[in-house]
Length: 195
Image (cartoon, rainbow, N blue to C red):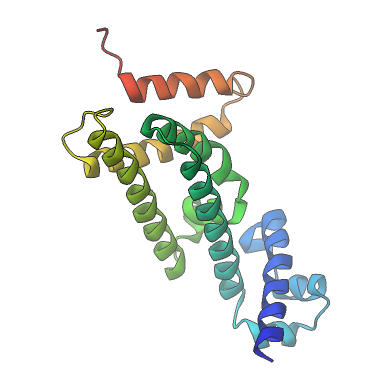
């Protein structure tokens, strides 16, 4: 019985994910989710207490997916430089493809929900820990020169958040995005001071 209940919850989350992606949190209704799942609205309430709870499950699923894919990308490379480069490219390209998770991280209209704040804090902490690990690896091998891996990780993860919006919205960067990313990585690694 527990297995069947989990399978049904999973089905509801998968269906809701598509609807939330298409309509956004505010415009999605429980009735819409129920119809798409081939269930009655009261049946949906048996598995989830509210639309917020379903959205939370969707965002958590996408966060787990992101973490799994990011760990896979980072673990492929041996060099700390290559790992940091892979992280930056992944962060700028992939996070926004998980639209519900991305909305949870960035949309101010969702910030009143307690679970959103928790998701944002957890993501920030996990991201900083991941970057800090790469930086410490680079410091230990003599590739990176930093006074503090913690401060470096905070700076890099904050910079990544700040760059997301301009890169996504800018029409002028659509064609030369790879070149833009290479310049970004060059500035991050080597700075702007001529040596």
